[in-house]
Every structure is written in structure tokens, then in C-alpha cells.
Length: 123
Ligand code: HEC
Image (cartoon, rainbow, N blue to C red):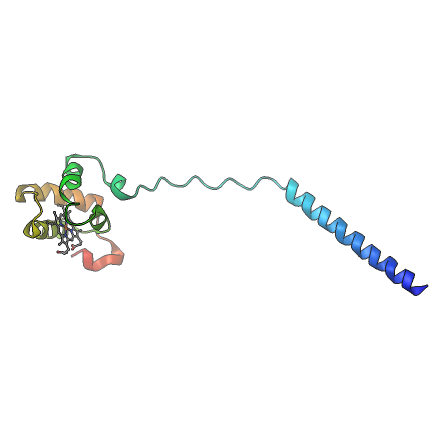
């Protein structure tokens, strides 16, 4: 007699669990569509991050001969910092001319300014 009762209770629990599952499934299904992921900000990376201009052409032409452009793009610096660096690159054999340094340094300082996390790169 009491076993039937126990079974009965168990059946209730099973039914309740089933109902709960259905309710949850229903809620999950009918909940408003999740907000669409925010449009990824068009973070320009790599060469695309460099503003267009004659200086960019120079950099594309002269600055990936010995190392990848990522070496340039990873760096940051003030105009003085870039001037020093460009001089150093010429000493290493880069084919830009010393006359091109001021414009290039100004351009690079603007496009790739000093980075707080890489203070040592900023000169
Ligand atoms: C003839 C080879 C050569 C060319 C061409 C060259 N580099 Fe370099 N560059 C190097 C060497 C070698 C290093 C690593 C040693 C060093 O830092 O001096 C380097 C390192 C760098 C770094 C790393 C950070 C630093 O200050 O050391 C940057 C930034 C850089 N070059 C920028 C440039 C730019 C901008 C140009 C184009 C004008 C250029 N390089 C062209 C040889 C070159």
C-alpha cells in the first residue's frame, strides 16, 4: 500500500521535473534573441594602421628589408626617438636618405607615438 504511495510521489516528482524542464526549455526558446554582438570596432592593425601618404610608401619600400614591418609597427616613439632610430637604421644599411628622416620621423611619431607600456622604446 505505502509502496504505491511512494511510487505515486516519485511519479509526481518525475512529472514536476519534466514540467520544469519544459518550462525552462520554453523560456530559453522564447527569451528575446540575445543582443547581437557589438560590431567589432574596425581596429586597423598591421600596415593598414599606417595613415596613407608618401611616407607610408617609403616605409613599405625600405623598412621590411632586414626585419618585418611588424618591428616598426610594434614600436612607438617621439619624433626624436624615431629620428634616432632612423639614423640607426641607416647606419645598419637602410636605404632611406638622411634627408628623408625629418618627414619620416614626424610621420612615424604621429602614426606610432610613444607607448606607455614600452617606455624604453620611446627614448
Ligand atoms: C639594413 C637593415 C635594416 C633596414 C633596411 C631597416 N632596419 Fe630597422 N632594424 C635593423 C636591425 C639590425 C634592427 C635590430 C637592432 C637594432 O635595434 O638596432 C632593427 C630594429 C628596428 C626597430 C626595433 C626597435 C629598435 O629601435 O631597435 C625598429 C622600430 C626599426 N628597426 C625601424 C625601421 C624602420 C622605420 C626602417 C625603415 C626606414 C628600418 N627599420 C629599416 C635593421 C634594418
